[in-house]
Length: 309
Image 1 (cartoon, helix red, strand yellow):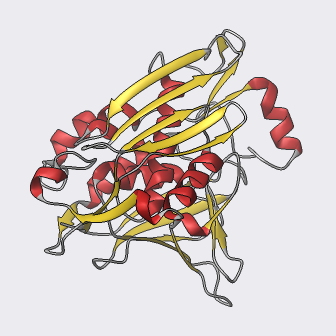
Image 2: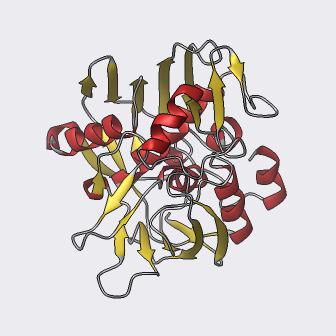
């Protein structure tokens, strides 16, 4: 069954890279429409952009979608991950700026907003994208792969010179409330040495210790430290969940990422959809529904979900 929001909910914040204030309203959408963004600050051009892999413009630092009229929206990955993790298949995102707000640097505030809005299931069936053959892309030491599996799962490896991050690995079955429980509160991170370089490029202008984990060697500079000892790899998994959701349907398969980022995950989706023999659309029956993210969220009580979000 396809799922959308029961009522609108509005969230305000600042853009991580632009530093500009932004207001977002999440609204219900009809079955079959997927996740769509609309720039309400633009009236002279088409301002609607489907959150689709083929609308993604390559960027190493965030996921940016753009339409044929040149209207774009950046940093959609945390919100997309929240939609995936709560099982929302159809939604309209109204936004009054070119970048989604960073909030606390994780997907948790988006999850909480979606839970406040409530969820409602339609009678329309849900289709999945089933991976039939392994598909892999590489870029130097980075790699991303999709392979067949009877449930959603992910394995991720990162390796950074800073001892505060270092080498981290994590594997997770992406079923039910796993995203809410294990990944949703993990924040974006950066190295102190990279901050000045990004700002010289006009990026990270809205970054603070309140919306990112900043590390310098073995030190975590962000007050309060880490939410998890392996928060960095959890956040990379969170990003991948959001980027994979631009496929337009949940992917029934296993994702493996090694030093992977936004650009390589989008390349992976392009590689998958360029090979018709490597995937197929399948109906999501009740048995399969229990093996993907968001299963049971629409039927759970708000208090129960907030406890694991």
